[in-house]
Image 1 (cartoon, one colour):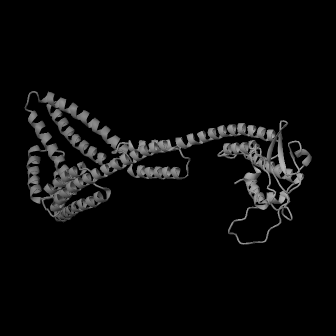
Image 2 (tube, one colour):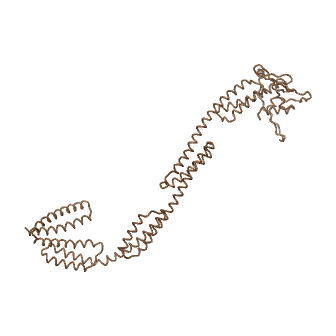
Image 3 (cartoon, helix red, strand yellow):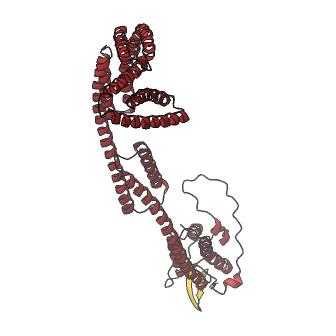
Length: 489
Protein backbone atom coordinates (compact mmCIF):
# COMPACT_ATOMS: atom_id res chain seq x y z
CA UNK A 1 0.00 0.00 0.00
CA UNK A 2 1.42 3.43 -0.99
CA UNK A 3 1.63 6.45 1.27
CA UNK A 4 -1.12 8.20 -0.72
CA UNK A 5 -3.45 5.22 -0.34
CA UNK A 6 -2.88 5.17 3.43
CA UNK A 7 -3.70 8.91 3.55
CA UNK A 8 -6.90 8.32 1.58
CA UNK A 9 -8.07 5.63 3.99
CA UNK A 10 -7.25 7.82 7.01
CA UNK A 11 -9.23 10.69 5.61
CA UNK A 12 -12.23 8.49 4.77
CA UNK A 13 -12.22 7.08 8.28
CA UNK A 14 -12.19 10.55 9.80
CA UNK A 15 -15.02 11.95 7.64
CA UNK A 16 -17.28 8.92 7.53
CA UNK A 17 -16.63 8.24 3.79
CA UNK A 18 -14.62 5.46 2.13
CA UNK A 19 -11.88 6.10 -0.41
CA UNK A 20 -14.09 5.19 -3.33
CA UNK A 21 -16.21 8.25 -2.62
CA UNK A 22 -13.17 10.55 -3.01
CA UNK A 23 -11.99 8.82 -6.17
CA UNK A 24 -15.33 8.64 -7.96
CA UNK A 25 -15.29 8.75 -11.71
CA UNK A 26 -15.58 12.12 -13.43
CA UNK A 27 -19.09 11.18 -14.73
CA UNK A 28 -20.38 10.83 -11.19
CA UNK A 29 -18.83 13.51 -8.90
CA UNK A 30 -18.86 12.85 -5.20
CA UNK A 31 -21.71 14.42 -3.22
CA UNK A 32 -21.67 14.44 0.54
CA UNK A 33 -25.10 13.39 1.96
CA UNK A 34 -26.92 16.22 3.74
CA UNK A 35 -27.63 14.13 6.86
CA UNK A 36 -23.92 13.56 7.50
CA UNK A 37 -22.97 15.33 10.77
CA UNK A 38 -20.20 17.83 10.53
CA UNK A 39 -17.31 17.17 12.96
CA UNK A 40 -16.89 19.72 15.72
CA UNK A 41 -13.25 20.23 14.77
CA UNK A 42 -12.24 19.13 11.29
CA UNK A 43 -8.61 17.87 11.13
CA UNK A 44 -6.31 19.63 8.74
CA UNK A 45 -5.27 17.86 5.50
CA UNK A 46 -1.66 17.80 6.72
CA UNK A 47 -2.73 15.87 9.81
CA UNK A 48 -4.67 13.38 7.67
CA UNK A 49 -1.75 12.88 5.31
CA UNK A 50 0.75 12.23 8.12
CA UNK A 51 -1.45 10.11 10.38
CA UNK A 52 -0.56 6.37 10.18
CA UNK A 53 -3.28 3.76 10.06
CA UNK A 54 -3.50 2.13 13.51
CA UNK A 55 -3.71 -1.68 13.77
CA UNK A 56 -7.20 -2.92 14.63
CA UNK A 57 -6.18 -4.75 17.79
CA UNK A 58 -3.51 -2.35 18.97
CA UNK A 59 -3.74 -1.08 22.54
CA UNK A 60 -4.30 2.65 23.06
CA UNK A 61 -1.04 4.57 23.20
CA UNK A 62 -0.11 8.24 23.46
CA UNK A 63 -0.29 9.93 20.08
CA UNK A 64 3.02 11.39 18.97
CA UNK A 65 2.95 14.87 17.51
CA UNK A 66 2.44 14.70 13.72
CA UNK A 67 5.33 16.02 11.65
CA UNK A 68 4.73 19.37 10.11
CA UNK A 69 4.14 18.96 6.37
CA UNK A 70 5.86 21.44 4.04
CA UNK A 71 3.71 24.34 3.02
CA UNK A 72 1.87 24.14 -0.30
CA UNK A 73 2.26 26.99 -2.76
CA UNK A 74 -1.40 27.57 -3.55
CA UNK A 75 -0.67 30.12 -6.25
CA UNK A 76 1.46 27.52 -8.07
CA UNK A 77 -1.12 24.85 -7.38
CA UNK A 78 -3.80 27.04 -8.94
CA UNK A 79 -2.09 26.51 -12.31
CA UNK A 80 -3.04 22.83 -12.22
CA UNK A 81 -6.28 22.68 -10.21
CA UNK A 82 -9.09 24.47 -8.39
CA UNK A 83 -11.52 23.78 -5.52
CA UNK A 84 -15.17 24.75 -5.08
CA UNK A 85 -17.00 25.83 -1.95
CA UNK A 86 -18.54 22.35 -1.44
CA UNK A 87 -15.06 20.72 -1.39
CA UNK A 88 -15.03 19.39 -4.96
CA UNK A 89 -11.55 19.61 -6.51
CA UNK A 90 -10.69 19.65 -10.23
CA UNK A 91 -7.43 18.92 -12.10
CA UNK A 92 -6.47 21.17 -15.01
CA UNK A 93 -4.54 19.44 -17.85
CA UNK A 94 -3.93 21.34 -21.09
CA UNK A 95 -6.81 23.68 -20.28
CA UNK A 96 -9.28 20.85 -19.62
CA UNK A 97 -10.69 20.16 -16.16
CA UNK A 98 -11.08 16.73 -14.62
CA UNK A 99 -12.80 16.10 -11.25
CA UNK A 100 -10.42 14.37 -8.84
CA UNK A 101 -12.56 14.08 -5.68
CA UNK A 102 -14.22 15.94 -2.83
CA UNK A 103 -13.03 17.06 0.59
CA UNK A 104 -16.27 17.93 2.40
CA UNK A 105 -16.38 20.12 5.48
CA UNK A 106 -13.16 21.94 4.64
CA UNK A 107 -12.20 25.20 3.05
CA UNK A 108 -11.32 25.47 -0.62
CA UNK A 109 -7.66 25.97 0.28
CA UNK A 110 -7.65 22.89 2.53
CA UNK A 111 -9.35 20.75 -0.11
CA UNK A 112 -6.91 21.83 -2.82
CA UNK A 113 -3.96 21.40 -0.47
CA UNK A 114 -4.99 17.81 0.28
CA UNK A 115 -5.02 16.74 -3.36
CA UNK A 116 -1.80 18.66 -4.09
CA UNK A 117 -0.10 16.68 -1.33
CA UNK A 118 -1.31 13.48 -2.99
CA UNK A 119 0.42 14.61 -6.16
CA UNK A 120 3.55 15.49 -4.19
CA UNK A 121 3.59 11.92 -2.83
CA UNK A 122 3.65 10.60 -6.39
CA UNK A 123 6.39 13.06 -7.38
CA UNK A 124 8.41 12.02 -4.31
CA UNK A 125 8.26 8.42 -5.51
CA UNK A 126 9.36 9.53 -9.00
CA UNK A 127 12.31 11.40 -7.44
CA UNK A 128 13.23 8.36 -5.38
CA UNK A 129 13.21 6.22 -8.51
CA UNK A 130 15.40 8.77 -10.30
CA UNK A 131 17.90 8.57 -7.45
CA UNK A 132 17.96 4.78 -7.71
CA UNK A 133 18.63 5.00 -11.44
CA UNK A 134 21.35 7.62 -10.88
CA UNK A 135 22.97 5.33 -8.29
CA UNK A 136 22.78 2.46 -10.81
CA UNK A 137 20.77 0.30 -8.45
CA UNK A 138 19.29 -2.98 -9.61
CA UNK A 139 16.58 -2.46 -12.22
CA UNK A 140 14.46 -5.25 -10.75
CA UNK A 141 10.82 -4.05 -10.52
CA UNK A 142 11.77 -0.54 -11.70
CA UNK A 143 9.57 -0.87 -14.78
CA UNK A 144 6.68 -2.01 -12.59
CA UNK A 145 7.18 1.06 -10.43
CA UNK A 146 7.14 3.34 -13.49
CA UNK A 147 3.94 1.68 -14.71
CA UNK A 148 2.34 2.06 -11.29
CA UNK A 149 3.26 5.73 -10.99
CA UNK A 150 2.08 6.40 -14.52
CA UNK A 151 -1.26 4.79 -13.68
CA UNK A 152 -1.54 6.98 -10.58
CA UNK A 153 -0.95 10.10 -12.62
CA UNK A 154 -3.40 9.05 -15.32
CA UNK A 155 -6.09 8.20 -12.76
CA UNK A 156 -6.31 11.98 -12.09
CA UNK A 157 -6.88 11.65 -8.34
CA UNK A 158 -4.37 14.37 -7.41
CA UNK A 159 -3.52 17.91 -8.43
CA UNK A 160 -0.20 18.89 -9.97
CA UNK A 161 1.83 19.14 -13.17
CA UNK A 162 0.79 15.76 -14.60
CA UNK A 163 2.49 16.36 -17.94
CA UNK A 164 5.82 17.11 -16.24
CA UNK A 165 5.43 13.96 -14.12
CA UNK A 166 4.67 11.85 -17.20
CA UNK A 167 7.69 13.37 -19.00
CA UNK A 168 9.93 12.43 -16.07
CA UNK A 169 8.53 8.89 -16.21
CA UNK A 170 9.22 8.76 -19.96
CA UNK A 171 12.81 9.80 -19.28
CA UNK A 172 13.02 7.22 -16.53
CA UNK A 173 11.87 4.48 -18.90
CA UNK A 174 14.74 5.31 -21.27
CA UNK A 175 17.26 5.51 -18.43
CA UNK A 176 16.01 2.23 -16.94
CA UNK A 177 16.31 0.59 -20.35
CA UNK A 178 19.92 1.81 -20.70
CA UNK A 179 20.69 0.76 -17.14
CA UNK A 180 19.15 -2.66 -17.79
CA UNK A 181 21.31 -3.06 -20.90
CA UNK A 182 24.41 -2.19 -18.87
CA UNK A 183 23.29 -4.60 -16.17
CA UNK A 184 22.82 -7.35 -18.72
CA UNK A 185 26.23 -6.64 -20.27
CA UNK A 186 27.87 -6.72 -16.83
CA UNK A 187 25.93 -9.84 -15.93
CA UNK A 188 26.92 -11.50 -19.20
CA UNK A 189 30.59 -10.61 -18.63
CA UNK A 190 30.49 -11.93 -15.07
CA UNK A 191 28.67 -15.04 -16.25
CA UNK A 192 31.32 -15.58 -18.94
CA UNK A 193 34.05 -15.37 -16.28
CA UNK A 194 32.16 -17.78 -14.02
CA UNK A 195 31.50 -20.14 -16.93
CA UNK A 196 35.19 -20.08 -17.90
CA UNK A 197 36.13 -20.84 -14.28
CA UNK A 198 33.74 -23.79 -14.13
CA UNK A 199 34.90 -24.97 -17.55
CA UNK A 200 38.51 -24.84 -16.33
CA UNK A 201 37.63 -27.01 -13.33
CA UNK A 202 35.86 -29.54 -15.54
CA UNK A 203 38.59 -29.52 -18.21
CA UNK A 204 41.35 -30.14 -15.66
CA UNK A 205 39.35 -32.97 -14.08
CA UNK A 206 38.89 -34.52 -17.53
CA UNK A 207 42.62 -34.15 -18.26
CA UNK A 208 43.52 -35.93 -15.02
CA UNK A 209 40.97 -38.68 -15.73
CA UNK A 210 42.47 -39.20 -19.21
CA UNK A 211 46.05 -39.77 -17.95
CA UNK A 212 47.67 -43.18 -18.37
CA UNK A 213 46.88 -45.17 -15.18
CA UNK A 214 50.32 -46.81 -15.32
CA UNK A 215 52.18 -43.48 -15.43
CA UNK A 216 50.01 -41.21 -13.29
CA UNK A 217 51.20 -40.03 -9.85
CA UNK A 218 48.19 -41.17 -7.88
CA UNK A 219 48.93 -39.30 -4.66
CA UNK A 220 49.39 -35.95 -6.39
CA UNK A 221 46.50 -36.46 -8.83
CA UNK A 222 44.11 -37.64 -6.10
CA UNK A 223 44.88 -34.56 -4.02
CA UNK A 224 44.34 -32.32 -7.05
CA UNK A 225 41.03 -34.00 -7.91
CA UNK A 226 39.84 -33.38 -4.33
CA UNK A 227 40.87 -29.72 -4.63
CA UNK A 228 38.88 -29.42 -7.87
CA UNK A 229 35.83 -30.96 -6.18
CA UNK A 230 36.07 -28.45 -3.32
CA UNK A 231 36.44 -25.63 -5.87
CA UNK A 232 33.31 -26.89 -7.65
CA UNK A 233 31.30 -26.97 -4.41
CA UNK A 234 32.47 -23.45 -3.52
CA UNK A 235 31.46 -22.19 -6.96
CA UNK A 236 28.05 -23.85 -6.62
CA UNK A 237 27.55 -22.30 -3.20
CA UNK A 238 28.75 -18.74 -3.74
CA UNK A 239 29.34 -18.32 -7.48
CA UNK A 240 27.01 -16.80 -10.07
CA UNK A 241 24.18 -18.99 -11.31
CA UNK A 242 24.76 -20.19 -14.87
CA UNK A 243 21.36 -21.64 -15.58
CA UNK A 244 20.10 -25.08 -14.75
CA UNK A 245 20.87 -26.65 -18.13
CA UNK A 246 24.43 -25.28 -18.23
CA UNK A 247 25.22 -26.24 -14.63
CA UNK A 248 23.76 -29.73 -15.05
CA UNK A 249 25.80 -30.24 -18.24
CA UNK A 250 29.03 -29.15 -16.55
CA UNK A 251 28.29 -31.21 -13.46
CA UNK A 252 27.61 -34.28 -15.61
CA UNK A 253 31.02 -33.89 -17.25
CA UNK A 254 32.78 -33.27 -13.93
CA UNK A 255 31.06 -36.22 -12.25
CA UNK A 256 31.93 -38.45 -15.22
CA UNK A 257 35.62 -37.42 -15.00
CA UNK A 258 35.70 -38.19 -11.26
CA UNK A 259 34.00 -41.54 -11.87
CA UNK A 260 36.54 -42.51 -14.55
CA UNK A 261 39.42 -41.38 -12.34
CA UNK A 262 38.14 -43.37 -9.35
CA UNK A 263 37.59 -46.45 -11.52
CA UNK A 264 41.13 -46.25 -12.92
CA UNK A 265 42.55 -45.71 -9.44
CA UNK A 266 40.72 -48.72 -8.01
CA UNK A 267 41.73 -50.88 -10.96
CA UNK A 268 45.36 -49.73 -10.73
CA UNK A 269 45.70 -50.39 -7.02
CA UNK A 270 43.85 -53.68 -7.33
CA UNK A 271 46.32 -54.79 -10.01
CA UNK A 272 49.18 -53.38 -7.94
CA UNK A 273 48.02 -55.45 -4.97
CA UNK A 274 47.93 -58.54 -7.19
CA UNK A 275 51.41 -57.78 -8.56
CA UNK A 276 52.74 -57.14 -5.07
CA UNK A 277 51.29 -60.42 -3.86
CA UNK A 278 52.86 -62.31 -6.79
CA UNK A 279 56.23 -60.60 -6.27
CA UNK A 280 56.05 -61.28 -2.55
CA UNK A 281 55.33 -65.00 -3.13
CA UNK A 282 58.18 -65.29 -5.64
CA UNK A 283 60.67 -63.63 -3.31
CA UNK A 284 59.53 -65.68 -0.35
CA UNK A 285 60.38 -68.78 -2.38
CA UNK A 286 63.86 -67.37 -3.01
CA UNK A 287 64.18 -66.61 0.70
CA UNK A 288 63.27 -70.20 1.61
CA UNK A 289 65.99 -71.49 -0.73
CA UNK A 290 68.52 -68.99 0.69
CA UNK A 291 67.66 -69.92 4.27
CA UNK A 292 68.04 -73.65 3.43
CA UNK A 293 71.60 -72.96 2.18
CA UNK A 294 72.55 -70.82 5.17
CA UNK A 295 73.90 -73.81 7.17
CA UNK A 296 75.60 -75.59 4.23
CA UNK A 297 79.33 -76.33 4.50
CA UNK A 298 79.69 -77.08 0.81
CA UNK A 299 81.24 -73.71 0.36
CA UNK A 300 81.77 -73.71 -3.38
CA UNK A 301 78.38 -75.20 -4.27
CA UNK A 302 76.46 -73.03 -1.85
CA UNK A 303 78.25 -69.84 -2.98
CA UNK A 304 77.30 -70.62 -6.58
CA UNK A 305 73.70 -71.20 -5.55
CA UNK A 306 73.63 -67.86 -3.78
CA UNK A 307 74.85 -66.14 -6.94
CA UNK A 308 72.06 -67.83 -8.89
CA UNK A 309 69.46 -66.83 -6.30
CA UNK A 310 70.73 -63.25 -6.36
CA UNK A 311 70.32 -63.10 -10.15
CA UNK A 312 66.73 -64.34 -9.78
CA UNK A 313 66.07 -61.79 -7.04
CA UNK A 314 67.25 -58.93 -9.26
CA UNK A 315 65.05 -60.17 -12.11
CA UNK A 316 61.96 -60.45 -9.88
CA UNK A 317 59.40 -57.57 -9.80
CA UNK A 318 59.30 -55.38 -6.72
CA UNK A 319 56.62 -55.81 -4.09
CA UNK A 320 55.37 -52.85 -2.08
CA UNK A 321 58.19 -50.81 -0.54
CA UNK A 322 57.42 -51.97 2.99
CA UNK A 323 57.17 -55.64 2.02
CA UNK A 324 60.17 -55.48 -0.31
CA UNK A 325 62.41 -54.00 2.37
CA UNK A 326 61.38 -56.69 4.84
CA UNK A 327 61.85 -59.48 2.28
CA UNK A 328 65.30 -58.19 1.31
CA UNK A 329 66.33 -58.08 4.96
CA UNK A 330 65.42 -61.79 5.32
CA UNK A 331 67.16 -62.75 2.07
CA UNK A 332 70.28 -60.78 2.92
CA UNK A 333 70.28 -62.23 6.43
CA UNK A 334 70.41 -65.80 5.06
CA UNK A 335 73.34 -64.89 2.79
CA UNK A 336 75.20 -63.12 5.57
CA UNK A 337 74.83 -66.15 7.79
CA UNK A 338 76.35 -68.46 5.15
CA UNK A 339 79.22 -66.18 4.15
CA UNK A 340 80.05 -65.42 7.77
CA UNK A 341 80.32 -69.17 8.43
CA UNK A 342 82.46 -69.62 5.33
CA UNK A 343 84.75 -66.77 6.35
CA UNK A 344 85.12 -68.26 9.80
CA UNK A 345 86.06 -71.63 8.27
CA UNK A 346 88.53 -69.96 5.91
CA UNK A 347 90.12 -68.09 8.81
CA UNK A 348 90.59 -71.38 10.63
CA UNK A 349 92.18 -72.92 7.54
CA UNK A 350 94.43 -69.93 7.07
CA UNK A 351 95.65 -70.30 10.63
CA UNK A 352 96.26 -74.00 10.04
CA UNK A 353 98.05 -73.35 6.74
CA UNK A 354 100.33 -70.70 8.20
CA UNK A 355 103.09 -73.25 8.95
CA UNK A 356 102.87 -74.57 5.38
CA UNK A 357 103.45 -71.05 4.11
CA UNK A 358 106.77 -70.85 5.98
CA UNK A 359 107.95 -74.13 4.38
CA UNK A 360 106.96 -73.08 0.86
CA UNK A 361 108.59 -69.67 1.14
CA UNK A 362 111.83 -71.48 2.12
CA UNK A 363 111.45 -73.76 -0.91
CA UNK A 364 110.99 -70.72 -3.18
CA UNK A 365 114.24 -69.24 -1.87
CA UNK A 366 116.00 -72.56 -2.46
CA UNK A 367 114.66 -72.73 -6.02
CA UNK A 368 115.64 -69.14 -6.84
CA UNK A 369 119.18 -69.97 -5.74
CA UNK A 370 119.41 -72.32 -8.76
CA UNK A 371 119.39 -69.32 -11.08
CA UNK A 372 121.18 -68.54 -13.24
CA UNK A 373 121.50 -72.15 -14.40
CA UNK A 374 125.02 -73.46 -14.72
CA UNK A 375 124.43 -77.19 -14.86
CA UNK A 376 121.06 -77.91 -16.44
CA UNK A 377 120.81 -81.54 -15.47
CA UNK A 378 121.78 -80.92 -11.86
CA UNK A 379 119.36 -77.98 -11.69
CA UNK A 380 116.49 -80.10 -13.06
CA UNK A 381 117.18 -82.83 -10.52
CA UNK A 382 117.29 -80.34 -7.62
CA UNK A 383 114.13 -78.61 -8.84
CA UNK A 384 112.26 -81.92 -8.96
CA UNK A 385 113.26 -82.55 -5.33
CA UNK A 386 111.98 -79.10 -4.44
CA UNK A 387 108.67 -79.88 -6.21
CA UNK A 388 108.22 -83.09 -4.23
CA UNK A 389 108.73 -81.28 -0.95
CA UNK A 390 106.40 -78.52 -2.18
CA UNK A 391 103.53 -80.99 -2.61
CA UNK A 392 104.23 -82.55 0.77
CA UNK A 393 104.08 -79.11 2.46
CA UNK A 394 100.30 -78.80 1.74
CA UNK A 395 98.07 -75.78 1.26
CA UNK A 396 98.88 -72.23 2.20
CA UNK A 397 96.43 -69.42 3.26
CA UNK A 398 94.20 -68.24 0.43
CA UNK A 399 95.61 -64.73 0.38
CA UNK A 400 99.16 -66.06 -0.14
CA UNK A 401 98.37 -68.83 -2.60
CA UNK A 402 98.81 -66.82 -5.81
CA UNK A 403 102.02 -65.19 -4.61
CA UNK A 404 103.86 -68.40 -3.63
CA UNK A 405 102.69 -70.27 -6.73
CA UNK A 406 104.06 -67.46 -8.90
CA UNK A 407 107.41 -67.56 -7.05
CA UNK A 408 108.02 -71.25 -7.84
CA UNK A 409 106.60 -70.91 -11.35
CA UNK A 410 109.19 -68.27 -12.17
CA UNK A 411 112.05 -70.74 -11.53
CA UNK A 412 110.22 -73.56 -13.34
CA UNK A 413 109.73 -71.38 -16.39
CA UNK A 414 113.41 -70.47 -16.47
CA UNK A 415 114.48 -74.15 -16.21
CA UNK A 416 111.97 -75.11 -18.90
CA UNK A 417 113.28 -72.43 -21.21
CA UNK A 418 116.87 -73.54 -20.63
CA UNK A 419 115.92 -77.15 -21.28
CA UNK A 420 114.23 -76.21 -24.52
CA UNK A 421 117.23 -74.17 -25.58
CA UNK A 422 119.53 -77.05 -24.78
CA UNK A 423 117.41 -79.40 -26.86
CA UNK A 424 117.44 -77.01 -29.78
CA UNK A 425 121.21 -77.02 -29.90
CA UNK A 426 121.16 -80.36 -31.69
CA UNK A 427 118.64 -79.10 -34.20
CA UNK A 428 120.11 -77.75 -37.47
CA UNK A 429 117.51 -75.05 -37.51
CA UNK A 430 117.92 -74.27 -33.81
CA UNK A 431 120.14 -71.30 -34.43
CA UNK A 432 117.61 -69.61 -36.63
CA UNK A 433 114.79 -70.30 -34.26
CA UNK A 434 116.88 -69.13 -31.31
CA UNK A 435 117.56 -65.84 -33.09
CA UNK A 436 113.84 -65.40 -33.78
CA UNK A 437 112.89 -66.27 -30.19
CA UNK A 438 115.54 -63.84 -28.98
CA UNK A 439 114.05 -61.02 -31.09
CA UNK A 440 110.50 -61.76 -29.97
CA UNK A 441 111.55 -61.96 -26.33
CA UNK A 442 113.43 -58.68 -26.54
CA UNK A 443 110.32 -57.05 -28.05
CA UNK A 444 108.16 -58.51 -25.28
CA UNK A 445 110.58 -57.26 -22.62
CA UNK A 446 110.48 -53.76 -24.17
CA UNK A 447 106.68 -53.83 -24.03
CA UNK A 448 106.70 -55.01 -20.42
CA UNK A 449 109.06 -52.19 -19.49
CA UNK A 450 106.62 -49.71 -21.03
CA UNK A 451 103.75 -51.31 -19.06
CA UNK A 452 105.80 -51.10 -15.86
CA UNK A 453 106.58 -47.43 -16.46
CA UNK A 454 102.92 -46.63 -17.08
CA UNK A 455 101.82 -48.54 -13.96
CA UNK A 456 104.43 -46.74 -11.83
CA UNK A 457 103.30 -43.38 -13.25
CA UNK A 458 99.65 -44.24 -12.50
CA UNK A 459 100.54 -45.39 -8.99
CA UNK A 460 98.78 -48.75 -9.52
CA UNK A 461 100.62 -51.07 -7.12
CA UNK A 462 98.85 -54.20 -8.38
CA UNK A 463 99.82 -53.56 -12.02
CA UNK A 464 103.36 -52.62 -10.96
CA UNK A 465 103.74 -55.94 -9.12
CA UNK A 466 102.31 -57.91 -12.04
CA UNK A 467 104.48 -56.15 -14.65
CA UNK A 468 107.61 -56.53 -12.49
CA UNK A 469 107.00 -60.23 -12.04
CA UNK A 470 106.43 -60.78 -15.77
CA UNK A 471 109.49 -58.69 -16.68
CA UNK A 472 111.73 -60.60 -14.28
CA UNK A 473 110.64 -63.93 -15.77
CA UNK A 474 111.20 -62.72 -19.35
CA UNK A 475 114.64 -61.38 -18.48
CA UNK A 476 115.61 -64.82 -17.10
CA UNK A 477 114.40 -66.38 -20.32
CA UNK A 478 116.37 -63.82 -22.27
CA UNK A 479 119.51 -64.67 -20.34
CA UNK A 480 119.11 -68.35 -21.13
CA UNK A 481 118.31 -67.74 -24.82
CA UNK A 482 121.29 -65.38 -25.11
CA UNK A 483 123.45 -68.19 -23.72
CA UNK A 484 122.05 -70.60 -26.27
CA UNK A 485 122.66 -68.08 -29.03
CA UNK A 486 126.23 -67.71 -27.81
CA UNK A 487 126.65 -71.47 -27.93
CA UNK A 488 125.44 -71.55 -31.52
CA UNK A 489 127.87 -68.79 -32.38
